[in-house]
Image (cartoon, rainbow, N blue to C red; front, side, top):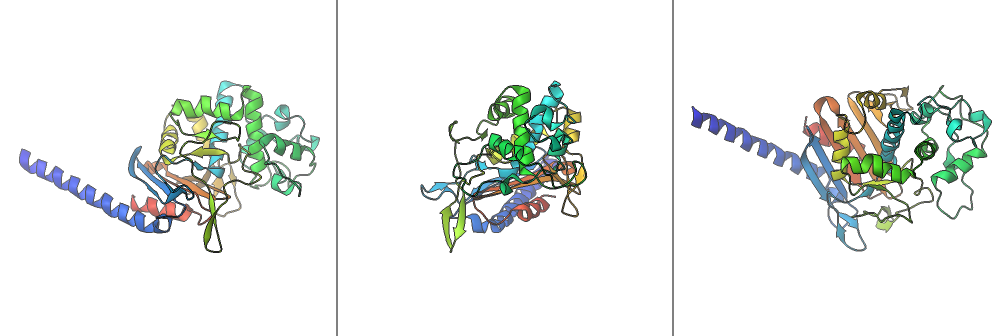
Length: 346
């Protein structure tokens, strides 16, 4: 009996290895356009907290011929928003602020017409703010920072709608949230993220990057395809705004971030529940919004798109399954690829 059971166990092990190899081959086929001497991608599949696929394709730096790896750090763009939201929730847990605080309590230079906007409205894109990208001067030469976003909005008295009555995706709202984190904590936003999130979770390669700060380790540079050739398009005039999109991270570090969504190692249960509550419908029929997370059916996800980078994280928490795709190119948007990869592992 002992030998028969051992044989059964060995057969199951071999079957599992065969399935994984088949899944990897199918993922390789999906990612074929990222392979070789082109801007690349890193792909991670986590099941029950364990990587069942962890692979990179293509180049992180075309000019230097540097290959992408699982440790490559990509600019997350709007995937950053879930970290900004977590920073706010940490400060709420500390009793340093309230989610229903008027934003002008912390940023009193905003127009009086913004009185009704709360922190919760900014978290859920329901504040009605005018898009700061539409307020940028035509002759702007230096990259904006979060404080510059505040200065632009200080001079804008109108709103798209009364706060709390509708949804409109707002990068400016998350830039303001980064400033609220600074005012409430007394730390610079990048320092708060490092001390309260990245270091406690062991995300040693992750940082909110500023030109004068530490360099990004294992950095991927962004590219766009122009007339059939890849051109470096790594930074824009809004790339230095941190709260809405300034974090660099890798699939290895995002595995640690994903694990923190299942237990109390960072946020308490009540705060995690707030982050994943569908507070508002969005402008897409089947998508609702939490705090820095999009919610569709049984998935929790967010994409990130900026000049030269396209990223996504998709979680199926009831299956303890997560897929992350980070890429350093302008196209394609990887959300559908991530869904297809996830379905292989159901």
